[in-house]
Image (cartoon, rainbow, N blue to C red):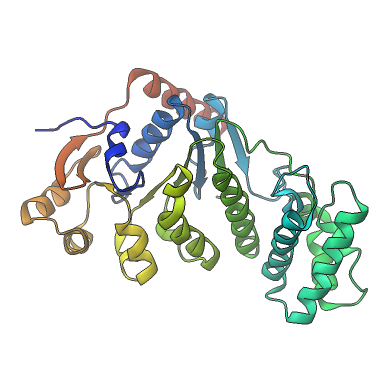
Length: 340
């Protein structure tokens, strides 16, 4: 017998984090969409980190922001305004300068101490001399011929410069913001992940509104050290800021095989286990102490069927969105097909 469950049910648990596990075709995208829209309907701001760019049209349909993190998209995140503030005292300037130094370290494959000092000096000078500086203003204040200046030159001009050295032109305060990364080039992964992590953490820690961060295909993103550190910290601390972390992965073994991954995989007080291959079902059985009957359910589950693990409860559920959510998803799919 399939039973019902509401996202409001998380209020009595240790945290509001939710994990969704299931192989391709199990219904993870549908489930994440319903969770995101359910939160949105209760006034919670939703961020979605979207490696395959599957949620952009849904965000647009819901009055949100579809951010394409790709060359030529026209979208930019400025590392020098990740921390919006009317103040430029040292309490604000220190962390803001550190963000810019760390981004340059990502771009340059690391910085030694003398290079970090050079970059920080250039950042502080840029803040002092320019009303709203961008990365190019920092590069122009570095000693000509310095290694970091030579490398940064490429990142502050041309198509890279349009993305990394321009004023932030996306609305990060929209009700729902999707960050699509399907077209992200390999060399851009580390700096983009860094910008995302800092921008999102800054807003979550403001605690001025409730926020949900949804991460699809976490197993893939977890390969990057920046995202890995960010997600581990989020899983442990986001409750303190009235937030929730929701993630999905089709390969739970990728997470459970490392200590940090296991921390994230087993952290949510609520988990949905969808259709699994026998090998993955066995790993979930060991990690979450599932019974043989529950493991068998995972191996035989159809699309949309999930085993809900919430606290001590284990329930078989069928995910079904209310009519308004179904309509929003239908329109988003139609739009996607028309643009293909």
